[in-house]
Structures are given as C-alpha cells and as structure tokens.
Length: 157
Image (cartoon, rainbow, N blue to C red; front, side, top):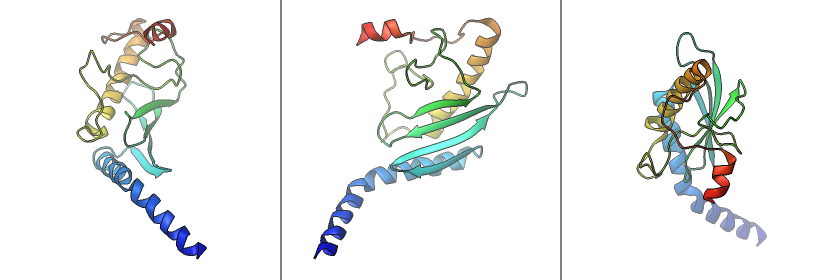
C-alpha cells in the first residue's frame, strides 16, 4: 500500500514540475544551438550554464556562470577573475551578478513565455564585458546605467 502512495505522490510532483522542465529544456537547447562556448546542465530545477568569454582578441578571458530557474530573470555571475563591486560598475552589490538591463529605463520585463536567454541575456552579457574593459581603461562606465550603490537601493525599498 505504501508503495502505491509513494508512486502517486511522485507522479504528482513530476506533473507539477513539467511546465518548468519544458522551459528549462527549451532554453538549454537554444543556448547550445547558438553558443558553443557554454556548457549547460539542468540541476534541481535550474538551468546552469558555464563557459569562458573573451570579448576581443586583446581581452582577458572571463569565466561566467548563468543561472535560470525558468520563471525569474536569469542571473549571470563572473566566476573568474573576481570582479569586486564598485558603485560605478553595472553590477548588483549583494549577489554580485551582472546588471544587464533596467526594467524601467530599458522598458524590458523578463517574461519566460516571450523572451529567450540566447537572444537577450547572453548578447547583453558579452556587451557588458566590452563596457567593463572600457571602464578599466577610462575609470568611467561608458554605457548609460542606473546606480546600484547600496544607499540608493535602501532608499528605493
């Protein structure tokens, strides 16, 4: 009797997560089709992609990790070399993930039904590194941005 109940509850759990799995599988396939430098896996209901990017021939190489739960906006982290938070860099201070767009100023709200990582988040990540390298040269973030400093974040919330 306990075996039947176990299978029923397991089946319900699989059914509940099926739409999420489909989203993650779709995004994984699209990323792998368009970006050979990224290796993707689905682990514990998250798509995790890792790879190395080099924005220009003269750039250093950056190791990145993209994490996507299927519903919320994907997050991109620089694994190596470590990039320390600074108020002038387009990066979030707490989790240290890249800020690739601003929902209001860029008029973009992530929607898993209509947006795909391969044609938004990844190209924006590659562009982010170009601006980061320009920042390292000039000391100024050359792309328009909204400040991410902790004081501003506390005032907003």
